[in-house]
Image 1 (cartoon, rainbow, N blue to C red):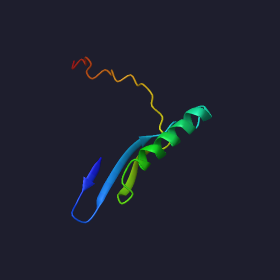
Image 2 (cartoon, rainbow, N blue to C red):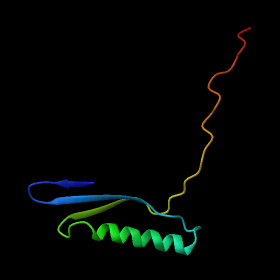
Image 3 (cartoon, one colour):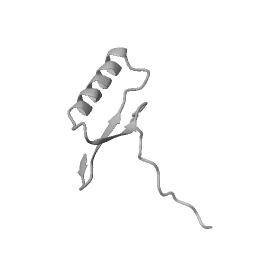
Image 4 (cartoon, helix red, strand yellow):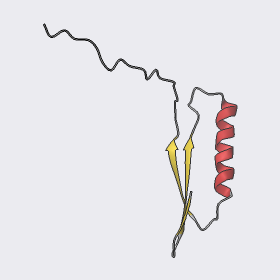
Length: 73
């Protein structure tokens, strides 16, 4: 995302890097792609990189029992 103002421009790049468990080729490819992406932006921009550089994504079971039968007697 690029924000332009009267005095400066700012580019935000959101990343989620592969974990240390991944193969070296995958990690290397990520950092090359990140560098290429940053090099495409204007050199005069302020560059802010946000995200998780050791991201782990897991699929969770989000179905949880939300109600139950309770006897009042």
